[in-house]
Length: 294
Image (cartoon, rainbow, N blue to C red):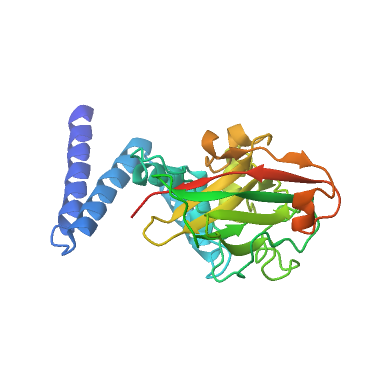
């Protein structure tokens, strides 16, 4: 008798799933129809597998509600943070860049990009807060090796306190952010400060999730890049400090070996220091970016 009741219950659940799936059958946009029907099937399968209590499901709804409340139009995007910490952002990235092309590896966009940051000259210093000075330079090329002139490198990073301008109201506008352009030979140069490892924000639902599951919130030190050039696909990537202790346990799973750089010590008052008006010892990193043609 119990087996019969269980079977009837399972059949009823299956019918419910198919009924909901069928409700989207007339969706005009074929791609939206596919996405919604697949979402229903997978979400229902998750519920059948885990059998949440009504209280647990209400907790999940509250979690998503609080996640939305933490988002704004300028700096904070808690849903991106959630996507990042669940590895979904990197999975979407991998699916959309799964064909080997010889271009630079991509990684997560992150939740702290701000549009319209200052245009900066070749080698200009974008740091208005203290830190260890560094110069990052290299070349931007197409996959066939051709240098790309006038490519735009939109760059951003945290200050030494582990926070981004905009996120941290104490930092000057545009601190550690800027839009650089390559010269006629595709070369770029950025003066800034050494990036530091930092914890992602833990004052919202994502932080509570990490705490409840025993995960740390730390990201390895990195610079963000979004690179645009006519006739090429936009590249979104990071450069990671190869000596950072969090490379193997990045909270958002964004590290790729090809994106690691060394910050080599340089002496004070050498030719490069004089060129970019650096006083005292500093460090230098070199990296060449390769863009796919669109």
